[in-house]
Amino acid sequence: MIYKLADNIISPLGTTSEDNLKAVLDGRSAISVYTDVFPSVEPFCASLFSQRHDFTTLCIDSISEALTHTTIDTSSSDVIFIISTTKGNNLRLWEPASQIATHFGNPNCPVVVSNACISGVCAQITALRLLDSGKYKTAIVTGCDIQTQFIVSGFQSLKALSSAPCRPFDKDRIGLNLGEAAATIIFSTEKPNLPAAWALLDGSIHNDANHISGPSRTGEGSFRCLSDILRNTEINNIACVNVHGTATLYNDEMESIALSRAGLSETPVNALKGFYGHTMGAAGVLESILTMHSVEQGLILPTRGFSQQGTTNAIAIDNSLRHTDKRQFIKLLSGFGGCNAAIIYSML
Amino acid sequence: MKTICEIFITPDSVTLCDNRIPVTEKGNKLLVELYRKFINDYPKFFKMDTLSRLSFVASELLIKKEIEITPNIATENRAVILANNSASIKNDTDFSATISDPDNYFPSPALFVYTLPNITTGEIAIRNHYFGESSFYVLRDESCLNEILESTPFDSALVGWVECPDSNNFNAHLSIVRK
Image (cartoon, rainbow over all chains, first blue to last red):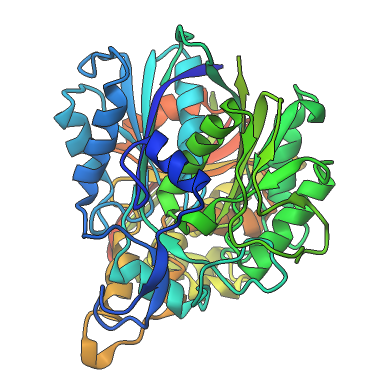
């Protein structure tokens, strides 16, 4: 297992994890309709920064803020940078990662995880594996994507977007909203001396072996991931499952099937894309951070946009804040290419 | 980690388990030639972008070779872990061309779907019913993949480097490995 030392979120809702949590608890969202941000695209509903950001600078800012809460020497060879992104900086993924590592004086080659929408969870799993292997002592995991004409027009061509704020798991859901953010978690092999310490216990990645852009009708990959990570715990220990919840017809249906097959129909489930939209490479990291901070306070964040059960299998999802005294949670994601990933965290 | 078999594909050569496979074409046409000669039963191949065709053809030749060596191998949980330095840049460029001219704006969903490098791993998983892990990394060079593979749990995996900056300039080095 590995331990979280610090984290950061920079999003349209704030520049620290604390500010982001506060915004979500206040019920705020930056999702709105945009008409003139990118050339030629149809109007779209998304959560965007008030000005265009540079990808590399955004990552550096997020990492820098997280580092202020640690005493890590980033120039040490036992520190590894792991970047999760789908489109990087203007389609370049390696170059900005290399610039980020160089900026912090790190001698190692950064690892870029580019596994579609599950990248943010995969990056945390990569950190777990590399640190557990003894190769490094610290991993700085940053997930980031900024919205562009490229991404918006692409999703519009797939007809995957909703023209209104998205409605995860709702019976009237019609598609996703896009979003942008940077989120960083700094992991260590050593348990920090904090009143609440979060440990990343395990992770699992599986392919549906079904379709490159549509989810499996049986939720096969997600089910296998959930089964794997539930092996060494009791379902009763789980405060909540924070799911992908993109609010497309197929994704949410698939996730409800996977949750049901894995015995998680009664476990509280929530989804955060009603606050942030789909932040692509940042999603897995951002959503894990918010779940950590909220469960630490005994809270299960509401699923903004949800109103009425809209999936074949009923799941325990709610649009209001709930309370918990449990100390573990699962983060689940799925992505293009038929990939799925899940991780389990425990508060020590 | 043990290598069962490996393949190198460049725009004008193919080497499978240290044996050169004679080919007449180059570049993208080489991949089509390999498909027609050795596979020829998966029409989806023609929908794939060059990066996916490259990975697909490499994986097919490896798998056929593996079946010769170990005919009844169970592969349901095989992992597919690939990497490169340029992600899906060729496909990205092709998609960009469908949106860059405001007077000729026609974003293509068929192209957009391939603007993620991990799609190649999905294509291989679908073809072969692999329910194991599928992952894609963007790294400095091929040597950086080793420590990732060493720390990834799997019994059997299809792994390697698939670089495809454009449709006639590519390089693949894939292997089937076991732990």
